[in-house]
Length: 442
Image 1 (tube, rainbow, N blue to C red):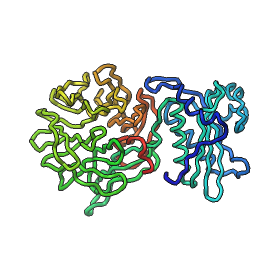
Image 2: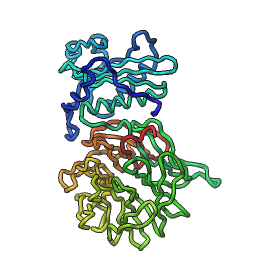
Image 3: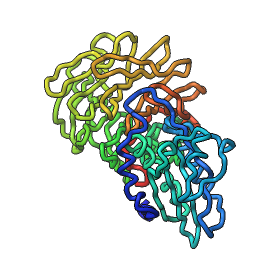
Image 4: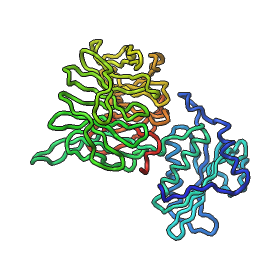
């Protein structure tokens, strides 16, 4: 990432004003659950004048197309409908309007001396103007980073905010390994890019690692793993290391969650004989006792301002979602109408809480407002949905489903529109945790 030079294309004086113009109009209100898709034309990128054609041009075109489709906000028009190729600096807006395009993206590239140059532009067809123009220079392996960066620029121009293209997703992968002369199931934390590509193992404990949770700055992952057959809380830096123990009290130490903007964890501990939620710092010191239930209280998730915490408790007789006011200590039940509710996740927008609820014997993904209103069931069918995790822009939800037999990771919009299956890996793949923006490439 650091090797890439991101430069504005200084083609016309108007180009320098384009970003400000783009931000003045919001083409899509991403706070609304249902919205019309914008028709967009995306011709295959052409070589710059005097440059030779190269497969990287087609690869960059396809990658940008996939990035934009991933958002669920664009309708990419078929190339068979195009009435010719766009000409740099002389866009025939009427021609693109005739096929129904409201937006147009053009791309030109050159590969010379080991340097890959990519020039990309976004146009508003209806208003006949350039919205965004960027030039990227780097090595050929940097091409995906260039495309993802421009996809974020497109989202910024269209919605007023960046999207998920600089984020990654942590998840738990169960794999069979040969250990002590016999086959055993080992669960490790893995990372993948936002679109399911680039899967790599993060932990190497050779045992069981569960409940990945990101710090607000994306520098650390907390998780629970075993020491002498007892689950302890670990924190591991994204840039390396093997992880260090934060807390390992008798009983169980599970379901860590970072307090927003702080190097403080909410964790479930049972050292007193009852499972309750505490705040601990990264040195393992207990700072505050948050819940005082008689049964099992686990899985904290905090509102973006850190003033409230949703969690799972069976204080009412069955596991349900509750919300704690951190200042007053008042607790109220959030989930109703379900036999079993678990795995709450608070949206980074603060407007909804996702969780899994048992419906007709199968867990499904449900969202609700923090006040308990407007409950929506987003998944259905035998495979169901579990372990929801919000994207950093609050528009998408990653989750686990066993619709194909084994658990795999999928993604959908916040309104339940399916987007993509992210994993097709051996074993069960569960418990996705979506990182903050800016983590990819670190």
